[in-house]
Amino acid sequence: MHPAYSVILFTTASGAGYGLIFWLSLLGVNGLLPIERWFGVASFGLAFGLITVGLLSSTFHLGHPERAWRAFSQWRSSWLSREGVAAVIAYIPAGLAAIAWVVFEDFSGIWGLMALAGAVMAIVTIICTAMIYASLRTIRQWHNPLVVPVYLSLGLATGALLLLLLMALFGYRTTYLEGPTLLLVGAAMMIKLVYWWKIDREDKTWTIEQATGLSASTQVNQLESPHYQDNYVLREMGYQVARKHAAKLRYYVMIFAFIAPILALGLDLYLDNTLSVVLTIISVASSALGVFIERWLFFAEAQHVVSLYYGESRA
Amino acid sequence: MTSLPASSGGKKLGLVIDLDICVGCHACAVSCKEWNTQGYSAPLSDQNPYGDDPHGAWLNRIHAYEADIEGDRNTVHFPRSCLHCEEPDCVTVCPTGASYKREEDGIVLVNPDTCIGCKLCSWACPYGAREYDYAHGVMKKCTLCVDRIYNENLEEVDRVPACVKACPTGARAFGDLGDDKSEVSKLVKERSGYGLFEEFGYKPVNKYLPPRPRRDKAADGAPVALEPTPASQSTSKADRLFQWADRLLSR
Image (cartoon, rainbow over all chains, first blue to last red; front, side):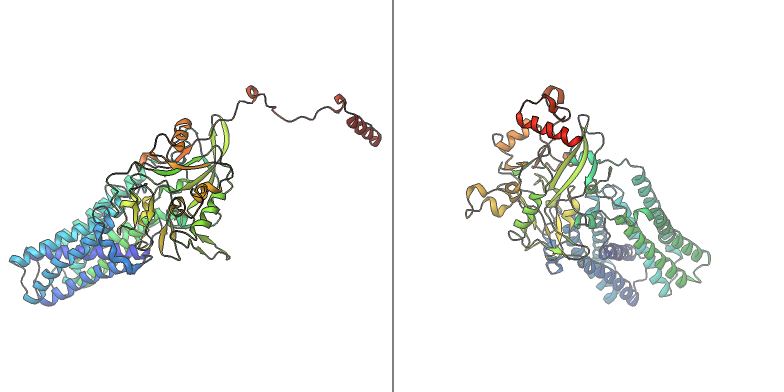
C-alpha cells in the first residue's frame, strides 16, 4: 500500500497527542501530577496541538478537503467516520478538563470526571483509527487482531514519553513515572514483535486462482497486463518500494522506537534525574523517528489482494 | 447512506462475462471509457496523456492469463470491472455516504458531489474495480451505464451498458441476475457461472462463465494439421495445366 505522508503524520502525531491526554487526565485525577497552571498550558497545549495538526494533515490527502465535514455522517457503518466523530467529541471533555487545570488549577470532583471522560475518548479515538485498517479484509497484514493493540500501545508509549519530557523541562522529578514508562515502551515493543512474527508466519491465504476463479487450474500466470503504464490501482495498492528493505527498516524501528528510549530512560533512572532534560529529549526524538518509520512500514509492508490480478501468485 | 439497503428489491442488475468467448480485443474497455467520459460523473480524466507517463481512470480493464483448462494450457482473456456486490465493504467503509448501493436495482454508485476522495473504498475492494480520478478528486467506478440503461432518448436496443453493446463476439451479457428466469440467470446456470473471490462474502452479482475445454480433436473429425492435397490426384484441367507448367519450369 502506498504510504501517504499526511496519514502517517496524522496517525503518529494524533496518537501521541491522545496518549498524552490520557496520561495527563488519568495521573492528574489520581494526584500523581502537579496541577500547576503553566505546566498545564504547555502539556494540554502540546497534546491539542499534536491532535489538531494530525487531524488537519489527514485532510490533505483528500481529493476534496473542503467536503471533509461530510465524513461525520456515516458513523453507523464506517470506522473512518467513527474516528472523525470520536476525535471531535474527545475535544469537549478534554478541553473542559484542560480549562479546569489551567484556569482553576483544580482537577477534583466534576473536573475529574471530565478528565476521565477525555481519557476514555482518547482511547476510543485511537481504537477507531486502528480499526480503519484492521477492518479491511483485503489486506492480510492489516486485518489482524494485533493492529489495534499496536496502535494503542504506541500511542500510549509516545504520549508517556512526551509527559516525561514536559515534566523534565519544568524541573519536576520524573523518577516515579520512568519505571512504568519503561515497561510501557517494552510492552509496545513486544506487541510489535509478535505482530511481525505473526504476519511473517501466516500462510498467504489468497491465490491468483481464487482471484480469477480459474481454480481448477494448477497454475495461473498473467500473460498480459491490461495497461503498460501504472494506473491508480498499481500506484496505490501495488506499492513495493519498502518491501525489499523491510528487514532493515524493522531493525531501525526496533532501535529508534524502542531500544534507544528504553536505554535513555534507564540511564536517567540510574543517574537519578541529573540529566533528565537531555535524556528525555533523546527518548522523545528517537521514538518519534522510530514510530514514523514504523507507520511508514505498516503501509509499505501491506499487500492488497488486488495484486493477484496483476500477476502475484499469492497475497 | 453507506449502510446497505435493508431489503433489496429483488432486482440485481449485472453482467455475465463469458471467458470462453472473450478474445481480449479491449473494445468493451474503450467503449466504456468513451461513454463514461461524457456521461454520469464525467469527465473520466487522463493525466499526461501524450507525455512519458500517461495514466488515467478506466472502469474496465482486460487482463490475459495463462491457465490449464482440463489439461490444455490456454490463454484466458479476462475483463475486470465492478461486480456490483450485494454486500460490499466499499459501500460501508465510505465516511460520507457518497458510495452507495441502489435499492431498486442493486447498482453500486459513487455520488461525485459528496465524495471527498479519501480512497478508502478502493482499499476495501478486492477487485481493484475503483479508480481515483486525479483531476476530479473523486473516486470513479463502473455505473453499469445507469445513464444508458434507463435512457428513453435511446432506442430500446441500445439501452444496455456500453461494454455490452461494443463487444464484437457477444462475450458480455446484461440483465437481471435476481430473476431466475432471465436470460443471464439461465446462462449462469447452464455454464456454472461464478463470482470472483466469493470467499470474501461480498456476494458479487456479476458472473463469469468459465472457459470450456477444447473439443476432442479426433472425435470431432477435425484434421490435426493441414496437409496439401497431392496435386497428381487432381482431375481438373486447370490443375493439370499448372502441373505441366510446374514440370516445365522445374527443368
